[in-house]
Amino acid sequence: HPNAKQGQTYTIATDVTFAPFEFKDESGEYVGIDMELLKAIAEDQGFKYEMKPLGFNAAVQALESKQVDGVIAGMSITDERQKKFDFSKPYFDSGVVMAIAETNKEIKSYKDLKGKKVAVKTGTEGAAFADSIKDKYGFKTVSFDDSANMYDDVKGGNTVACFDDYPVIAYGTTQHNGLKMVTDKEKGASYGFAVSKGQNKELLEKFNAGLENLKANGKYDQLMNKYLGKQA
Ligand code: GLN
Image 1 (cartoon, rainbow, N blue to C red):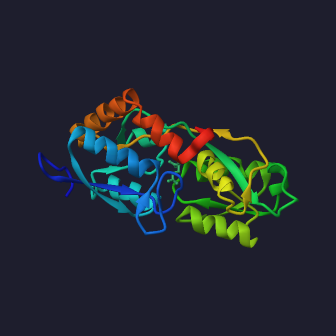
Image 2 (cartoon, helix red, strand yellow; image 1 turned 180 degrees about the vertical axis):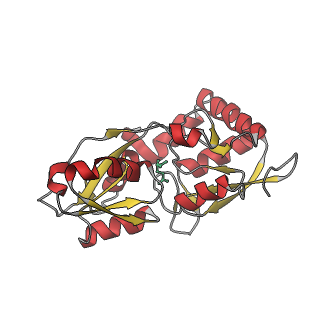
Image 3 (tube, rainbow, N blue to C red; image 1 turned 120 degrees about the horizontal axis):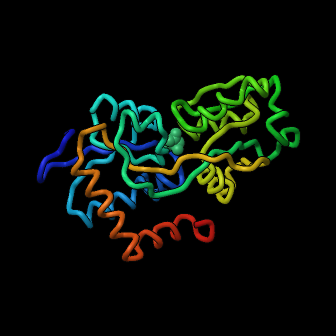
């Protein structure tokens, strides 16, 4: 129920598959940094919420139309989004990187994308970055709603590369997801928890206060270590 008051339950939207931030474990439960971070913050601050894995673009749209109270989905704090949403303090530094199939020996730089198709995920910073360089390097983009389908398209060879968040691609390669990186990461914005502009100030304040407490009591670091190990 949007705009939850005392004792009510907030509705929070997230992505469907964006490991290590949100993904289903073997038992079908949603786990990951975002899932556990919000859980720990809610416990610390004493609020209840219901999590809706809608997909990234759908989650952002749902927030914009005020169908949900907040979004936690590895969502980058961009200037454009700050016009529509209020963000928490940043909780994770990110960036965008190109990924290609592990078996691909042809693509070594953006120049090699000339005349090729590149996969992007609708509404993301990675898609915006690909759009910003596609004319310069002469490639076309193909859009996907979630990261898993985008990676499958690259592995299947329909598209030769994709652009996604560095921490997600880096984690994927440690899980042997069939992709590799051949270029450096591009600068990207940090992740924040978002609420509609001017709405749910209370929820945002609780998120920030909880985040600060988890950083002070070591739980934030424990969580990062759990999912990222030495990468953190
Ligand atoms: N960080 C990227 C963005 O905000 C991608 C988020 C995602 O795909 N879940 O656009």
